[in-house]
Amino acid sequence: MASTDTRKDEVFHNPSAADPAYHDLDSRIALAGHPIHAMLVAFPIAGTFALAFCDVAFWWTGDLFWARAALWASGGGFAMGCLAALAGAAELLLVPGVRRRAAAWSHAVAAMVLLGVMAASWSLRLQQGADAILPWGLILSWMALGLVGIAGWHGGKLVFEHQVGVSLPEEEDPALPPSDTSGNSAP
Image 1 (cartoon, rainbow, N blue to C red):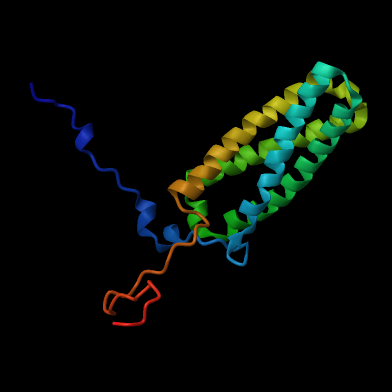
Image 2 (tube, helix red, strand yellow; image 1 turned 60 degrees about the vertical axis):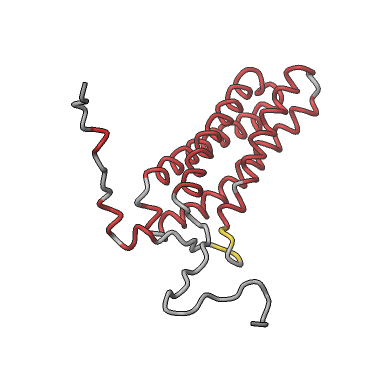
């Protein structure tokens, strides 16, 4: 029996790909060729995981050490998240190819919501101390973990699928003979 489903044979075309700016994905905010945003995001991610761990440890032990550690983790995660957000926003605004990808906007929205949750968590802890952890501090820290996962998923799509901020080797001129990369200069 022949299939009447023609969707398998359809080829989808992205009209944005015809624009040369769509392929402009080189980082504008970089240090020695390394994108600053990619360097900074590890710190708020670590702060978010540390916050969740400290909240659970306080819940299990009742030890005030974990409440103080959670306060520092939330504050440090929020502060470093603000720095990473500045670098990421600059990349979003300065790199035309990034703005044309839905994953960039999804990543940005998830990261901004994450910053809001981290700010609320830190503020709550500054005002109420250890009393803030149960239940709202714990809820906020687990919400932050979920948001880190969402923002990280979309950030990973930008790097691994769209090659944003990835330095690719220069294309060799086909008119020239291939270069010897083995280090041997003898014929």
